Length: 361
Image 1 (spheres, rainbow, N blue to C red):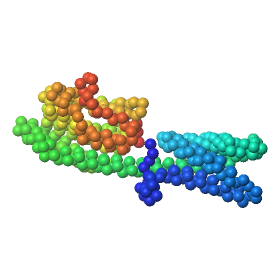
Image 2: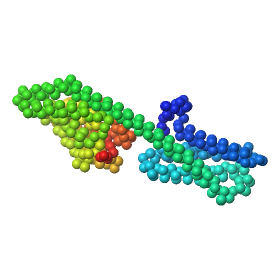
Image 3: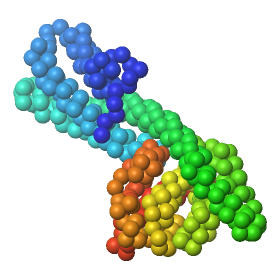
Image 4: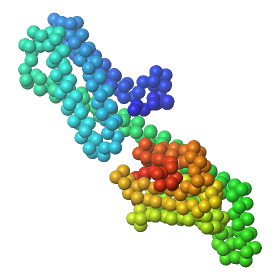
């Protein structure tokens, strides 16, 4: 998968040429020109015209080989820096070896007699060393270009992640301040007061206040500990638990060793809200909401799942904007490795889950 052209470069934006392609073509055209000029200056009676064709073929082969080297460098984006440099060194050695063989083969095809007379293992070794330095230089330039592309891509993804995180916070806040939500919450508080349960009413008011304060003070672009995210969502669930009385059962299954892993702030809010809105609020039965975290080979999978009642099944199906936003936010933040999935399970649950890196610092 190739990166899009740099929009800030007039040449690239106009012709759609990538920076690595410019580097490769410029390098080998310069190499071709220097070798040709060198032969013209050093030899009086030269057959330089007949040498130009095989040299041009070898140069085109070098361009194709360098393009392949660039693709191999890009394919190792997850490789540690020191290993990547060693890998690039091996590519330069391989490129020099293949180029030397190509150079010998092409010139032998066009000028067999001259090639046979001039060939020795010493001359071949000298040519290999010469091409090794050439491929070492072009590989180093390509590595620098790839690093630059990756840095721009990370910066773009970080900026988009921050924008999506801010949008997620604003959406969460809009829901928190939604008149219907506030009406139901305040109505529940009034009912508790009327039922002479002032302690529960006071606790609900405190939960609502703490929830709004915590949501407003949370930086939407930062990663926070999973236990802090759960503490924020517990305040929200405590409010909803009063509204739905014995129709909502919450079960949080988070091992102690996973409490400090880093997650994007407010990432669970749309998932829990989705379960409340489409399962609990539209069902007369008891809905069990589970929040689970477990380690997998690729990282830590976090899952929000709820039981399905017959009246809620159809409501849980289909596209949900909140889930789509979470999937997009995770994709921007972690790339395609987040393994986001949502849907009904065989055991009559609706499950939404994703994988994040096992990072605690």
